[in-house]
Length: 269
Ligand code: MG
Picture 1 (cartoon, rainbow, N blue to C red):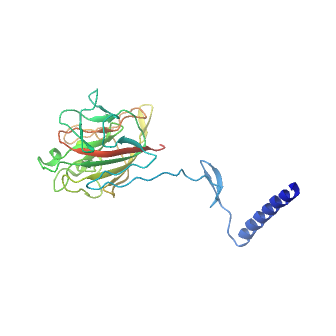
Picture 2: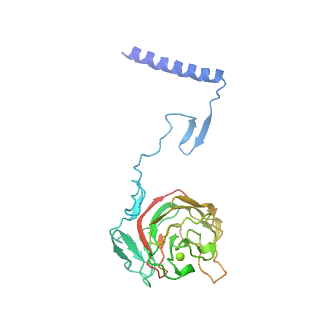
Picture 3: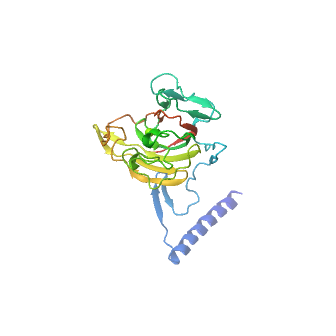
C-alpha cells in the first residue's frame, strides 16, 4: 500500500513538473506575486480565498436596506442603543417607523464605538416639507471620526455654495454631480474613508474619501486637504491631530433630517 501511495505521489510531482516545463516551452512564463499572505503563482488555486459573506440589500423608498453579514450595524431602525449624545448622555433624537430623526437643539449623535478607516453606509431623507433655503434647508451631516463632514443637505433645486451642497466634503470639495433625490425621498451614501495619519503633531498622510450618493460616484478618491469645520464664512479649518479611532457622528443642524440603515465595515489604514 505504501509503495502504491509513494508511486502516486511521485507521478503527481513528475506530471506537475512536466506541466510547468510544457508551459515554459510554450513561452508562458511562470509569474509570481508577492502578497501579504506570501509569494503566489499567478492563478494559484491554493492562494487564500477571501472570506465568504452574505451581501445586504439596497434600500427602497418604502423599505430600508439590509447590511452585509460582516458589517457592524449601527442603526437598524429599532433604537439608539449604539449612540450617544454629542452633548453627553443618551442620544435624544426621535426613533419611529424604522428611522431616527434629528431633533433641533438636541445636538449631534455619535456612535459609542470608535472607528478609523472604514466603509460606511447611511440612508437619509431631508424633510418633505420644504422650509428655508441654502444651508438652512435639510441640513445635517455625516462626520467621519467626529471631525470630517460629508454634507447632508436638501440640494434639490436649492442654490448654495457648491462646496457646501449635498455630498460635498464640507468647505473642501464639490461633488462631481448633484445626485439628489426630491425632498422627503430616501437617499443613500456609501463612503470609503481612509483616516489621516499624524506623527509629531503633523499630518503625514491625509485622509481620503470616495463617496457614492444614491449609487453615483460623487467623490473619487479625494485627498482631503484639511479640516471641514466651519471657521467663518470664507475660511476653513486645518488638520488638528487626533486619536486613531473616534466616533462616527450625525449632525443636528436644526432640521428634522431622518436616517436609517447605518452600518460600517472597518478597513485597513
Ligand atoms: Mg451639515
